[in-house]
Amino acid sequence: MPEHAVWCELAVAERQQRRRSTTSVASHNLSHALAHALDSLEELELDDRGIVEARAKDSKHWLQETSIARHAAAACATAETVVDCCAGRGALSERVADAVDALRGTQPRYVLLDRAAFKGRRCASKRLAFRGARCERVVEDLARATFEGFGRRLVCVAKHSCGPAADLILGRAPAGTPLYVATCCHHLCTWAAYAGRGAWAARALDRRDFEHAVRLSAWATLDDADHGGAAPAGGGENRDEMKALGARCKRLLDACRVDDLGGSARLLRYTSASVENRLIVAAAFPD
Image (cartoon, rainbow, N blue to C red; front, side, top):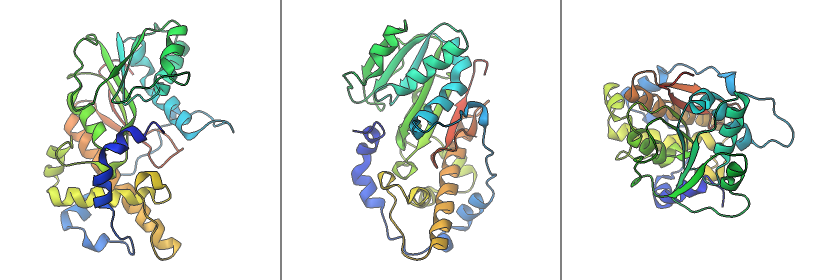
């Protein structure tokens, strides 16, 4: 099972309900407030600090993980514990360990937090232990997870934080914890879990606007069936417009999450390997 499917499975029924006909671009159905909020978004320039030159054998997942790890490396090199949320088999933790080694830092303890138990040779826990890093796996749903006992100097990283998983990480991580959370699968987001409701309301947006934006966000990944996209009828121009509107909805949902985090939190476009290319960063340690 692909690692990202772990959280996607949580909302299969919800995804089926949200799928809708995509026969035309529905921008004329947007409320005035939502249309204004989307039009007011600034484009995100690619932050290339974590970008590596792709080789033929490199998957988009490896490129994404490497970029996240490079952004988080300085904080992780001075942390007691790195909590890899929605860790899957722990590939992101491996990339973080590589980045810490490159800085010649001391390896922290790695906690692989996921609702599913991953075992076998493909799991990173044994490889991390082999290179001298302490590693443990915690099998727990994020909705019930606590970060107690993980140490006082934590860093939270996440790549497969699909939909509401990102909101749970942002809401449950201890205050002041450095966060490096890659968001995806916005079509699975729920109003109950959403961590950006304050900033959403400040833009004169309501729950109906949220549900509309969440549905439209699936259009950003029309070419990827794993993300709930449905092929539209009509020509390529219509399809491109729909994908652009979906991408703006994803960016708005993330922008409100960042605004509600406050402080030094920011939103980065951290990779060019995928349309799922935004990283929420809230760093209290030097970066």
